[in-house]
Amino acid sequence: MTPRGDTASFLNALRDPKRAKRLLGAIKELTAEPVAIMEVCGGHTRTIVRYGLEQLLPKEISFLHGPGCPVCVTPRERVDMAVALAQKRGLVLATLGDMLRVPGSSGSLLQARASGCDIRVVYSPLDVLALAKQNPKKTVVFFAIGFETTAPTTAALLERCLMEGIQNVKVLVNHVLVAPAIEALLKEDGSRIDAFIAPGHVCTITGTAPFEPLASSYQKPFVVSGFEPWDILLGLHNLLGMIANKETGVKIAYTRAVLPQGNPKALSFIERFFDVRESFRWRGLGNIPKSALRLKHEFSAFDAEKAYAGVFSSDSKPDPEACLCGEVLKGNAKPSECGLFGQACTPQDPVGACMVSSEGACGIYFRYKGRVPA
Amino acid sequence: MCLAIPSKIVELRGPGLAVADTLGTTRLVSLDLLEEPPSVGDYVIIHVGYAIQRLDPKDALETMDLFLDLLGTDDDA
Image (tube, rainbow over the protein chains, first blue to last red):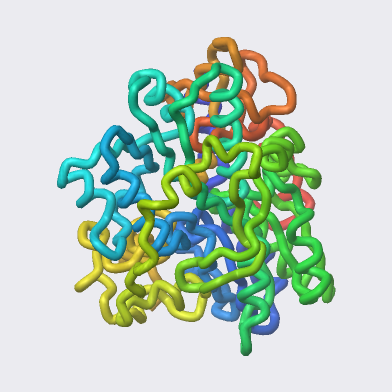
C-alpha cells in the first residue's frame, strides 16, 4: 500500500460514522445528570464543531470551549512588541501565519508588513534557521508563541544555532503553560466546569504530570484526547465513566500518541533553555502566576526581550470593550453571544484574536456556521 | 497548530532531519525531539515541523476495534 493509502484508511476509521454511532450509543447509556465539559484545546473545539458532535450527543452534555488557542491568548502588548521589533532596520521578524492578523494597539503585523517592515511567515522554527543562513547580515527574530507542545521546538532551534555557530537568531518568547490557566478558571467564582478533555499534544510532551495536582486539588476528572471525532467521543466516554464512578484523576484516551511520562527528550529541551516567569498576562484571563516561560539567563544572547528592551513601549491599549474574546476564552460565553461576531468582527477583518486563529472559537464558529447548535 | 494526521518517514537526511509524507504531501521535518531516531516507514506526529512522537496506526486501529468489541454494542445500532 502507498503511505497515502495507509494513513487515509486510518483516518477514515477515526471519522467512520458507523463506529461513531456505536460509541454514541454507549455514551447515551452512561449519561445521567447534566454535565459541562471543557475541551481545553482549540483543536478539540474545531473537531467538535466541524463534525457537529454536540448535536449528536444527549442534550445533558454541553461543551465549554477552553483557552487552548495559543494565538488567542497572546495578549495585545506582546503583538505590540513584535510590531516594534519589525520596525527596526536590519531586522527580519519571523512569525507563524496566524499571528499576522492579530490586532495590536497600533495595527497588526500584516499592516506593519504592508508599510514596509520585513516580516516573514514561517511554518516551523526550522525555517527560521534557513532564514538566518540566507540573511547573514541581518538579525532574524522569531516571534515564538505556543504551549508546551511548541516550546521544545523553539528550544531545539536554539540548540541547532549553538551547534552550528549561528549568531543572528533571537527569539521573542511567549510560550505559555496550560495547567496554570486551567487552575485560574477553576478558581473563578461560580466555575461551571465538571470535567476536562485535556489537550492531546501538550500531553504528548508533558505526560499527565501537570494535570494530576489539579485533578486531586479540585476533585475533577481529566481525560487526554486526540483530535479526530472518534478521539473526542472516546474521551467523553471515559469521562462519563469516571463521573459515574465518582472518580477523579487523569486518564489517557489518546494512547497512540501520549505516554504517561510524556516525551522526556522534549521536556529536557524545555528544562535546558527556559525557566518559568513569575507572572504573565493572558488575553482574557489576565495575569496568571507562573504560567509562562522565558529564556534562562545563560541564553540571554538569544533573548530579543533583553536585546531590544529599549524599543518596547508600555502604553498598549486595552482590548475593545465590545469584544467578548476574554469571556469566550474562559468558556463563559459562546462566540455567537458577542455583538461583533460575524458583523464587525470577521476572519478577514478581526477585532479579537479568537476570530483570527483556525483554533480560535470565534473563527471556528464563523467557518462552520450552520453546524453550531442554536 | 495541532495537526494530528500521522505522517510517514520516507527518507532520512542527516543530521536530525527526515522527509515525511502527510497524505501525499512531503516536507522536511526535524527529528531532534524524538527519543530514538525513527526508521523509514515509521509513522510520527509532526508539530510545527518537528516530529514529537512515534505512533503505530495499525496498532491504534486494532485497539479501537477491540474496544468496540468490548462495548458489545451492535454493529447495526
